[in-house]
Image (cartoon, rainbow, N blue to C red; front, side, top):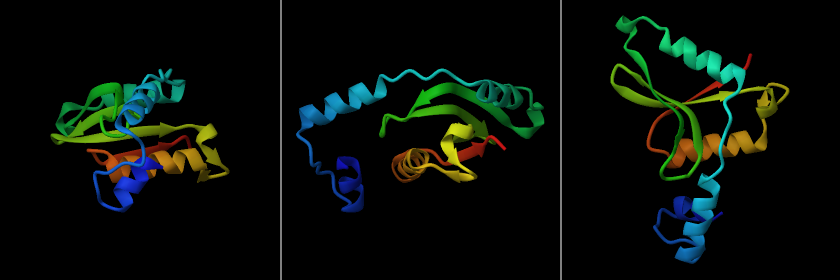
Length: 122
């Protein structure tokens, strides 16, 4: 809520005291993610693309410095960095992203430092 208050009101103020905010960010950022088979397969596909396409994998399981969110993979396309989220079935209700997925996408798009590409499992 504090992050959204700051974003929506276009200010650097926070609803949380700085020490609590930093502790929350540190604990949120500690979460370790284990890549799914789908994610590993897509990353391998990126890595196997011909060089003339200008697509390269920069980092797997990266961390957004501003939000603390884990990003599945950072790629470079023609020297522009792009954050890629690979979303399996648990990220959806039918073919609609669930609430947690929509929140993460919204926050990464609004507060992240790189464009976001979301790849659904289908």
